[in-house]
Length: 298
Image (cartoon, rainbow, N blue to C red; front, side, top):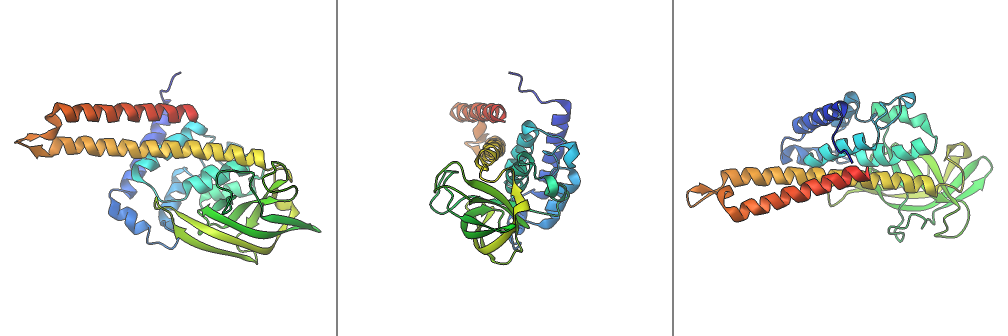
């Protein structure tokens, strides 16, 4: 399989890399971004929009640039080199995929322009990694659904203007059928949320829905058939996270090699010691293996 990037993909990698270098030149800048209320600087998010990064994965008909999984992987890898804190994965990759595959394209232009942040609310406290474990209830009442329940670890949830909520409209907990995806305005009466930083410096939120009314027209895809869309989007997000991890590995390898060149012991750079050369080669091999697997997954 040919893993070489096209000229356009190389240009994308270079431009995103330059943006990350200018905005994340050191950890002090990153720490500064994390002091903002939702853990990132809206001005940097606006730069992403201006650079076309937010519109990259969407088709031209949807107001995007028609990028595919490999382009998303390129962006995520470059963000990984800087440990970027903006909710790109949560909003553009994860929520964006659900909007694409669910044929709910009305918000995509707002995501692409940076005007709206959308967060997926699917995890519940006891669901762990089972996407079908959904107990938050959506009861039909005329032309609305009424939501009752809570969602946990909603990535980007503190800054979200809209939520995509996985709700149960039929069946029992853990049934594959009966899960409906609903687009919910975060300002709707009955919604409360508590944001907090995660271990990796991102932000998430606990979100409660108390008698929240959502129009039936806000169903994404088909009522009761949301699990396949959800699963496909989560798979794409996992591939994106793999690419992000590769970017972090790449940065660590470069930092290590630079340290080997500058740190001296016994009057010489420690990079001249064969044992450390072997270790640095092992690191490079593992990095390239991880990068190949990430591209293959994309």
